[in-house]
Image (cartoon, rainbow over the protein chains, first blue to last red):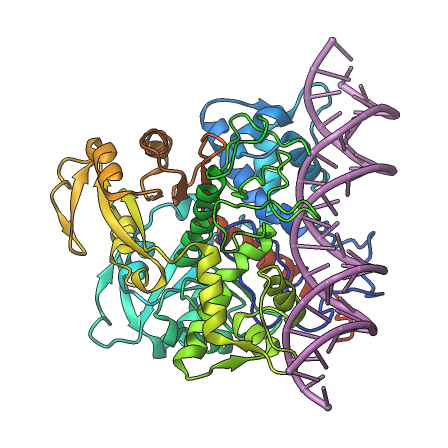
Length: 259
Length: 259
DNA sequence: GCCTGTGAACACGTTCACAGCA
DNA sequence: TGCTGTGAACGTGTTCACAGGC
């Protein structure tokens, strides 16, 4: 499932929304899919919705592993991950997973498999652009290392911020982007700039060869089709909750139907 | 139609369950209920996917309005929001929307309608729990006011932080939660605590009557079914991007199909 | 002509229910 | 007797394509 080109909102909720603005970028009709028997045969092309849940399973598995568990049933793991067990089993079946019937899944094996599928074997270097309020918080977030990433560089356009040290890194000017992206082998970047700067930053990132962007700026980014964009927008999340609040409050005004 | 009730861990998936408990509330054909709680056209029960996109349309509309536009076609608006126009039109049709054929949509009217549906007429008060790195950044984020929300109170469990002033608000101890939630009429809360504290905070929030939670802690929350939880997890977003990176790099190893 | 609104077709995702194996 | 793995049924969401009105 390639991401569609243009831009697509990919926020918090499990938005599998594959909004393809144009045409069938990814093989719709008769796109000779990579041969089944193809030896390279890494990824057994997973549904996007499954991909979005694997990280949650992984987190739950790590918790179980820390707790000393070595085998887990689909029911237990599903509960820990907040899904139902049928969905979990279906998801894991896409990994040609090796559970043991009558027993469950080996925790360690499953962790390895999921990490492998997600490409987390190699610690990935991430660039963070924009060290304002949010950017600083993200830079300071400690949870990355344990989950397969490290922030390799910080950038900002504001000369007064360049040189600041945040979380052990020195803030560099955005003009140095290309150089650093190359030397650090960065493929993933986080945009934490104001909205008005985000598109220019995205363009610069793409020019440097970055192919995955996590966008915290409240705007739509336009990027080539080979670049993946995911979006996190706090206000949008709150507005969705607001809708449900609104709905709940009008529902309580209605007579209670049967229970 | 059976919906699992019980304590559903509303964690990751964060799709508020559409309780289909046999309510024909909205316009069943021919059953014209004479009186609704709110006669002024309440919620025409929208698909969840549509709800998730309305905020994006709203943002795009505000940009257009600021630019002086007063009418917009579905094609233009769709582009600005990063979706395709068929989807946009379908979404708006759920709002019994009033576009003009051959012309387009009135920007101002559409803004009003979406804001109304999302319940953004009333500025909603939001509580933020956890003023660490991320919490402080969220508190300092200025984008709320213009989008229908304001942070009404900050809480933390750490006594050394209580009393700090952040973004014009004084941090209060979590023990004061119930009191403040009541006086400020807070229905929505943001959890920005470490994972190990999040469930306890969620329980406390629910006890106070909070019915919508935006969870930044990397864990699954278990809440009663009438409470909506949405989750934002940075590491998960990056891991999803990592998968696509991984896939792209194995694909380039394959012979290029035609483009 | 242009553009909205929408049924119908299609694609995707979830759930069920049971076959198959330890 | 479990519990996994999975086809098939079902439901949701997206796209198409055209009817309807300006």
